[in-house]
Amino acid sequence: MSGDGPLLRVTGLEAAYGRARVLFGVDVEVGAGRLVCVMGRNGVGKTTLLNAVMGVLPPTGGTVVFDGEDVTRLPTHERVRRGMGYVPQGHETFPQLTVADNLRVTLEATRHRDAAAIDEALEVFPRLKQFLGRRAGFLSGGQQQQLAMARALVTRPRLLILDEPTEGIQPSIVAEIEEAIERLHRERGLAVLLVEQYLELAERLADSFVIIEAGVVRRAGGADDLRDDEVKRLLAV
Ligand SMILES: Nc1ncnc2c1ncn2[C@@H]1O[C@H](COP(=O)(O)OP(=O)(O)OP(=O)(O)O)[C@@H](O)[C@H]1O
Ligand SMILES: [Mg+2]
Image (cartoon, rainbow, N blue to C red; front, top):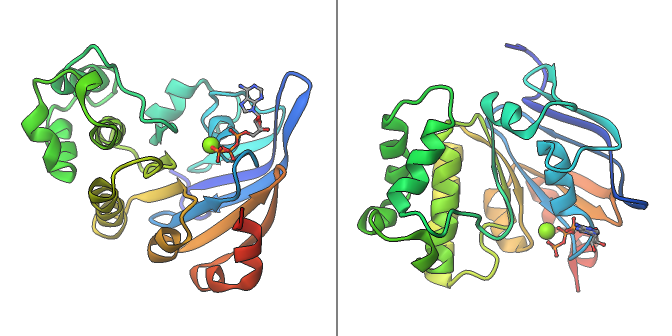
């Protein structure tokens, strides 16, 4: 649609909860096929940024442009329809529904309604295939995270927005999730906006990064700059 320019361009984004302002003019761009990491300590506004980008929390200022179109005022489902896939922090699924039904209800909400999208998503997370008849609420945290990501993939996004997909998840599944992100990015050319607190994982995956502190971008750069002492200081607890 847009031709030139990044797939996602966030400019001067501001957000607040009532009177409590949280974001004070955040800029971040994700080029087509790029993987950008959003980092920063607990409570700096990473989730708020993603929620504002997706319209879950309507921004109080700034703009969100996706594929050349200003989507700042669009409802979340319209952004999803345009190709913005979102996996919120804490792996949201429908706990009462089976894995298969979680994927089916997501498919029904898409514009394309192509059932092949479910198989494509399961190819990325083959572990889920053995649990198709199980209720999502009975999966482990790591399996639920995989299901939440698979649901986002069923919408066939061009940009996948992930909020700490490895948080609190057993190490064996963290490796699978990292591998899945890497494959989606490198093999399928999916653009990714990833909130991630683990520096080593960010170093392996990211093309570029931004570090948020107190609701502003304190530092931005390419993957190599992640090895800086300044970066370690900004992320140290
Ligand atoms: N629903 C809410 N109502 C009021 N304040 C909130 C709400 N959600 C978050 N906040 C506050 O906004 C600030 C930013 O929170 P946010 O969840 O965006 O941080 P974060 O960087 O994602 O943190 P974490 O690494 O713990 O996930 C914090 O001070 C938090 O207490
Ligand atoms: Mg968060």
